Length: 290
Image (cartoon, rainbow, N blue to C red):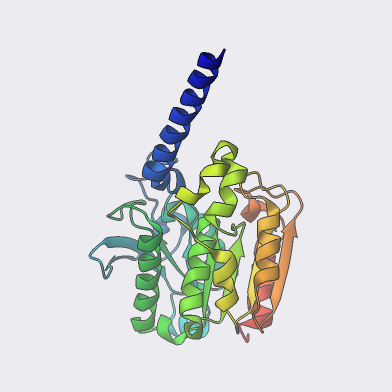
């Protein structure tokens, strides 16, 4: 009997060590599934397919990685310079081409300038995705806007979905003086706090997580600008209480606007009836003097 117990604990130890090694080594592949959906690394839709100005830029980051982005200002320069600019950060799957339907509404119906990027390792961008790398990519996009002849004069809003929300929070916290607003949708508190919900067997191994994205602490450094929280009540990936706690953690002197979509899930929030109306109202009420 004692021998069987020893074998059992030996087996448990081996499995634990194996899971620990897998989590540590392959967590970037889990966190950043850049090849999903299939074809995401080879096919990126163009803005012209959605009736938008089709200008792609290849930006060189400070660590030597070339990333792709779409820059979509309003066609008339006089209109563009008076319109707000949305810097859009996509979630953990797909590429910027998958978000062009969203850009189409922001551009055509709401009248915004839009810039989207595919992070390193996503779409046709070079490199491999990491927390530090995505933060550099976001800063590179902001630096581009700050030197753009038109967009540098516009009111800038960071807008992120899921993982992109964490990217946006981090960027704004470091550059709040460059922004007039922040929009986050279905974003998590941090990766270590999310793991127990999406990978319950790994809940005791979160100490091995080196991709942190601590938005629940970073958001506290945003002190001035208004923030719009877009949350899906039926989010099947990120528990809605993560967004509620982010809302509570935010200490900005600007407005904190909460919009919850009763029938929204993680991936279909933008399809909810009042989604874009909420964004439009937020920008008009707190950012854009029309």
